[in-house]
Length: 569
Image 1: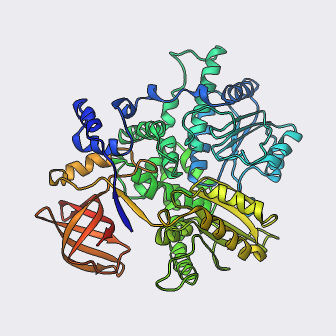
Image 2: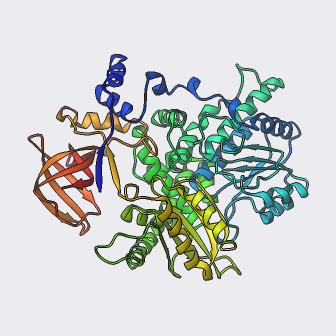
């Protein structure tokens, strides 16, 4: 591991400080590329205008026509948290704007697979719907869209995934990553795309005289859902996404949120008035995702749709139980995946450039999380495969991959597909996360082809895990009040939470829970507690640590502790 301090131009820091920004926050912002106070303005008026989204006006016209005719609309969603929140935003928003017949369909991870397929299109048509609207999927659904159109359905695709070589042909398509789209933020989550569509739909309805500016539905009530889905999908938190997330957090902290989000906070034992992006990423998001992984995502969507708090709380507790089951299943799979990946190289030898593992006992709903754990452990692009549980598909393997900076996972799959025709039955995704389906007999061909691409694209520097930090921590900022202020900020993918680094003395160390290192450190002359989760090897007396700040509460006393991220020396 290598610890690298971020470059922090002092002149820019001083510019922010002179504008009234807290000195510590100013350094953190500048280190993450912020150049001016304007980028820190989280007001709704600073959101990028929807006009840059290709196809959004046409989508609004199609949806406005459907509302005028009171057509039956069916939303086809994805089975993750982004898809669930996008579905809830779509249903709530369309109903607010006058649609009276809106329902949804969620593909089953096992029997249907990802996205709008031809069978799902037939199912939607058989249920009597007239307009099919996708959220968080559709850009790769060439056959599904074609089937829906052949059945006479009007189709609107809203998505954010990267397109393949062939595009579908719906009546309207909104995706910042489709060819020809000039929208500046390519990192919108699926729920963000749906929110933008609703903004333009409302404007279209105003133009038609349905509403006026003084009397129109307040779509900003949907922002807590937009914030949750955006963080949970681990998209890059560029300035536009940070504004969406900040707006959602502000409303939640004031108690303005759907009953389901309040229920999830209670079920997770979290305080909503202290809502943070960490809550979204590690408490609420995983609970909703668990439904799509092991059960039925309709549980998650219904939790986000209901306005009945007792029902929302009951569903939130159900999601918590499912998530606990997911955690237990993941624990066993993780250990087995670690063992399988360790077999790929000998002690003292570097791991191969990419990792692919498969075990017949793996569950396809959890392979993505396990791939992330292996990737974190070995710092290698990783695919984990499980046998398909779909009827008649036992010979197929479902794989989920996670990548490291500098390695575009979907592009790598595309190259593997070109070099080994027929091996990849289906694939898609992003730079950092992707999925694919292969025949079990082709596993070793995929493994070798994937590793070959990684060996060609990655060098020793990229294959070395680096922890970027904000440098030394001034003891004046080692206070619980400062940590609380930092927790209120929007941190996440592409806008990393504050991490500091410097030499500290290790005064004592012991194992807790058999797998975590509890530390007592001397930092700038003061004794500070620390903990390194997942670390069992002892540290030397002096060490260069990378650490984040946390508040440890014990018997009413609140003390700052260091959460260790890595070490050198």
